[in-house]
Image 1 (cartoon, helix red, strand yellow):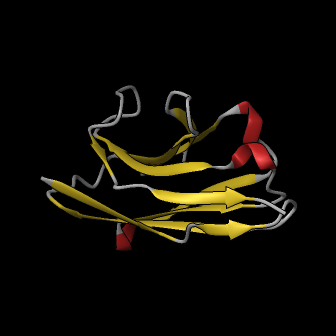
Image 2 (spheres, rainbow, N blue to C red):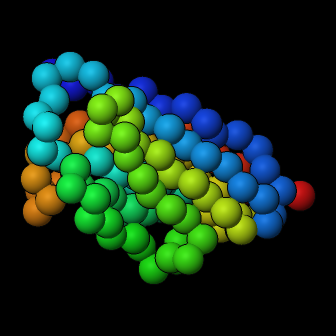
Length: 118
């Protein structure tokens, strides 16, 4: 089993920045893809960004140029640096881990709230 623990959410003003972190523990293969999804009230969960253990990345169009995903393989930790935050970025952000780039997530974190408000 795999556990994912997120941190770093909170309240920020429009134009501000936040950094999310997620650490994985348990039975983790050295080859995997970790990432972030988000779910706003009344909407479906959607991809934000993913990163493979080799460093390949994929971003959703709404966050390109504003968010940066990175990871530390030695620490089994993935980060999401969020800059120029907008009201529409408000959501619960979930860390994910999937065994292969081409799979949907196999494991989820508990979620961390990000609220962008003035």
